[in-house]
Amino acid sequence: MTLESCVIAEKKPLLTVAEAQQRIHEAIVPLTESEIVPLKQAFGRVLAETVFAPIDLPSARNSAMDGYAFASETFSQTLTNVGTSWAGKPFEGVLKMDECVRIFTGAVLPENADSVVMQEHVTVNSSQIIFPEDVKLKKNVREIGEDVRVGDALCSANKILTAVDLGLLAAAGVENVSIIRQLKIAYFSTGDELLPLGESLAPGKIYDSNRYSLHGLLQNPCYQVTDGGVIFDDKDELKRTIIQAASAFDMVITTGGASVGEADYVKEVLDECGEVNFWKIAMKPGKPLAFGKIGACYFFGLPGNPVAVTTTFDIIVKPAVARLAGANVKKPWQFAAICTTPLKKSRGRQEYQRGILQQTETGEFQVVSTGHQGSHILSTASLANCYIILAAECTNVQIGETVTVVLI
Ligand code: AMP
Ligand code: MG
Image (cartoon, rainbow, N blue to C red):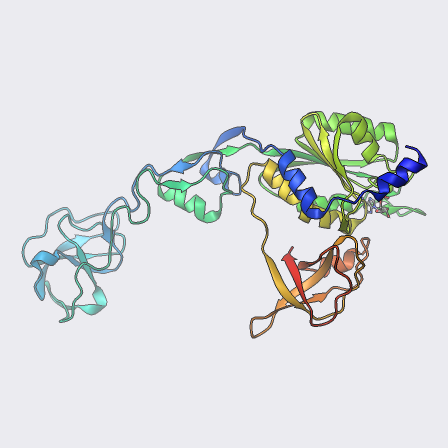
């Protein structure tokens, strides 16, 4: 690239965060390959097919209370207790005129019974059960199918299965489910200055922290994650490693070397061995971010600065991996909050400043800056529970102004 074309390229308006997110959404084709696993192994995974109820829930009419069951048609104030219906051991007979049974929660009602009265509301006189004057008929009965009908959708395709979902599927007797296969992701750090933990720091060297952040950020049962280690600032080595990784993984993420320095080869390498969808976005932190594809593998070249890594991951990469994994992705909720510290901001890029969101006793949301906002300042990022989103055109924020926040 000549100096002149460099300058022209620089002057092109950067993609906005929303445009970048949209381009990623369009570029990513969700995985569809599936595997069948026992229900417990499906926790946190993406359902491949809608599961329909094989039975009604409840599958039998049963009692919601410990009490006495009877038929409302033949009810009289005093009934004779003729037996017991236990959970798991129903009363076998049919109730005759003036008869009731002792019944426990979850126990099946005798065929012709339709009412249960709580044990606390009756008077027991040996086998004679005396019901209250104001007895309510046809109460405390759980009807067949009132939860789920045979054939109803229990859980829809592309849902991430929660603990409640596992309970629901188990209640319906579903033993195995079909889930989307795990997404294979590899991540690498780049940089000659990086040292692994355990080594002594030498002049100019720093510990590689990005791979630790990514390790945490990628904890998810839907992902099978490989730490690829450090790639030195050597273009050939970078190229070789990325090409090799692209053939084995669904997604490759690198950090560092994505900018315009002499030792920044990521964008160049992506250009040479794949397709660059975009490079650089109007986001702070996180401007030098490359997205593209190498063969069938999606590639993210994240910035090197540690806070730019975690922020671009949360805002850009996280929805992308979730989409590739086949999950229904919902936009995270945003809140309006009163800013209680002044914020420095210059026009140009959308900023994601680190903040602490809290709720006052009256329910109002307030947000305070965590302090120094440099993209190398991990300590203030560690204090944050939210990003304060400041639009590209916005400038300094004064105390008392309303800002938009999103939870981390
Ligand atoms: P770069 O984009 O490679 O120029 O990196 C930008 C800044 O992030 C530099 O100060 C790097 O030393 C730092 N950096 C890059 N990679 C890492 C990493 N893995 N861990 C910690 N800092 C890093
Ligand atoms: Mg570097």
